[in-house]
Image 1: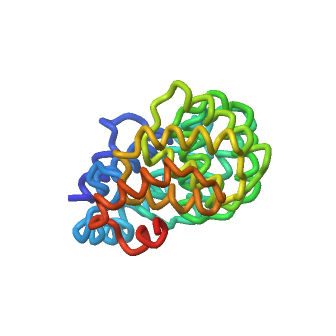
Image 2: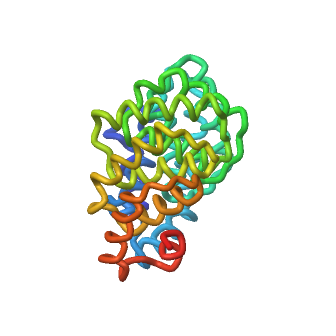
Image 3: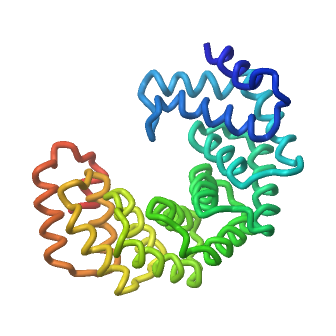
Amino acid sequence: MLSVALRACRSQDGAAFNAIHGATSLHRIATLLQGGSGSPQAPQAQNALKSVATSADLQQLLEVQKELLAGPALQGRTVANTIWAVARIQFGHSPLIGAISESARCLLKDSKFSPMDIALTAWSFAQVEYQDAPLVRDLSQAAVEISTEFQPRSLANTSWAFAVLAFGDETLFLALADSVCSTLEHGKWKPQELSATAWAFAQVRFCIEPLNEALAVAAMRAADEFSPQSLANMSWSLARQLYDDRPLLEAIAVRSATGVAAFNSQELANTA
């Protein structure tokens, strides 16, 4: 069934196959295997992932996409969607990842990456644990230049990604902090975005008082909506930053107590 789907995606109704088609195909395959959610379904999805990762059709598609990424008129979203799919399904195709990196650097120099493109690319490279210092520096510089255009989800993903990549550049995180504070004043942040942002700044040990205060106020408003993972990340972040906000800590304690049965061992450890 997946082989048929792969061939159908590639046909694109007879149109000339280009990098956009390749990225779309990979994105659809990733979404299909993820069941339309943010995480794989076990155990059926895990078996499907293993099957697809070794399929001849997929390997051919990866090779084709690698070549297409070297072509003209490439778009930032095409590159971002390709690496997102690679990260989601854990394809582990190093030649393609290298081609994505090279294409991304070229587009970044021409300012052809949007905030979402930057966030998706940084997040995906963090997920696949692919070390590419020049690309990380270029992504960081691009993020600083357009940081005021970032929305909550892109800010959270970008902050998290650079923290995971151990790129604690002061200029970058100060720019992200300013943008986070600005969007917190008038934007709607989800609990996962709040906790991921707090975790990122704590991970790179940037203790910025206005940012901590703004995140704490927003977290208090949304405390009843926090998942176990978000509660654990926020608790860990407060402890690492030595940020003593009693009302927020009490709200986290109350929320955690009512949902303690849903916590896994790591979340309990981080929350305690």
